[in-house]
Length: 95
Image (cartoon, rainbow, N blue to C red; front, side, top):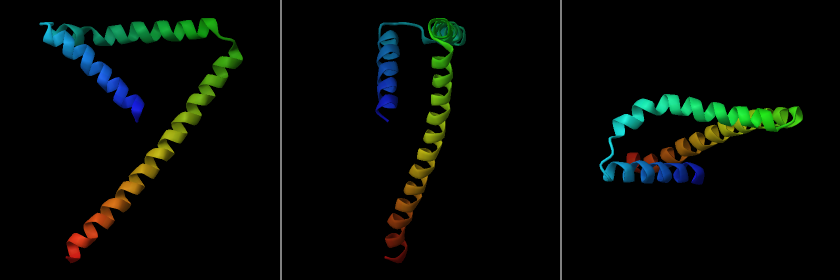
């Protein structure tokens, strides 16, 4: 959660200051897909070039474990939310 808040705050600050100083945000948004491909491709290439195969395999398996954990955590969060909303609505219906 803190990671998402941190990324959101960073993006708001970066682009907010850019817009506040008179920057044209449409220029950045039109170049964004190409910039992301360039940055992510360079990062992936550097990762593959600088690590051994066992590190790469361990990283990929770690991503799989993390995605499964995230989906189970998401399910647990939604079930908790449903339970809380049910209990919060119950007194309003009967009262």
